[in-house]
Length: 382
Ligand SMILES: *Cc1c(COP(=O)(O)O)cnc(C)c1O
Image (tube, rainbow, N blue to C red; front, side, top):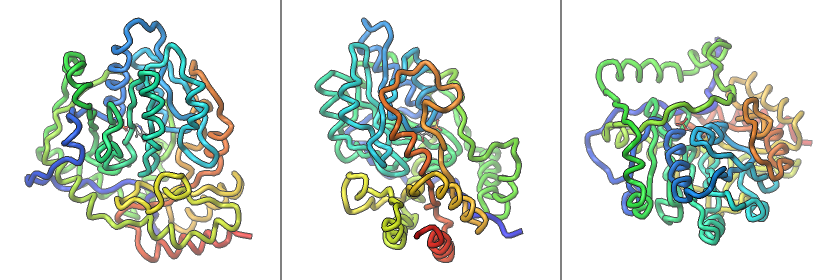
């Protein structure tokens, strides 16, 4: 049994009692929530209550993305509006976005992708013009882009499995002072769950971390019941805040910032693919800065020339013991259960979903793994 390098997910760090400042502390209030989805649901609730006269509130999201976005919006009685993404990008097409704003729009969600935030400056202008709440969904990116330039009104952070900082669940809603002042009574009305860091938590941590090892991950993947890596739409039921012990957050952040910057290796060693119709989804190509993030990325995305090359490459990498995958596999409109949405374009989202392949960036990726990945991908250039 050779084992398999997991596609995503970092080990749960030990709690740390030595405080560090949260990167957004200067501009945002932190309200811990039961998950990223709960934090998003509360943000949407806030957006709706800012415009009480609207009967069918709408929230704009990109047409490619995590189905949890849709469930969080549905849970507040709003309607998701899917706006197509830019060509070869997971980010909102801002021309289509301007067209999609209606009398009923209450918010725009700027969704970060695998460690790269959407262009908040552009989205901020559109939101100010139409008096919409700008929500930065930073579930896949840490720290959120608004920590340094506080453009978003609300920010969503996730501490779930398979997110930048894994605390075995939880999330945070970060609100600007204005949003907090105007909505505290509403925020406070959500009940709070507690998180006990006792013997059971340490046991759970140990088991979880073990399951991330190559041998056990290879077995786990074979158990269809667990549905590892399958994208499903799940309705979001009740929304909760969370009494998350600060020590977990401190420990998680400290471990995160010590991780190696694997994406820099991919930037350099996979560039040869671009001559053969592949595209690296780094900050430079996505038009959001050119230097590349100095924080670890969640995964590294690349676009294959077409769906069949993508599927073959995923197969070949997995046979070589590398957990590469297609992420969601489908654009949002095509996922079962995502109905009664308004759509403004999905051609680019479909193209993106059919060509995306993601490579691991976590702390257990080794030099031999990287060489293996590059050597497998060499077979897919003409
Ligand atoms: C995972 C994810 C969420 C939801 O976070 P949970 O903590 O799993 O509820 C929301 N948005 C995006 C972009 C995500 O990737």
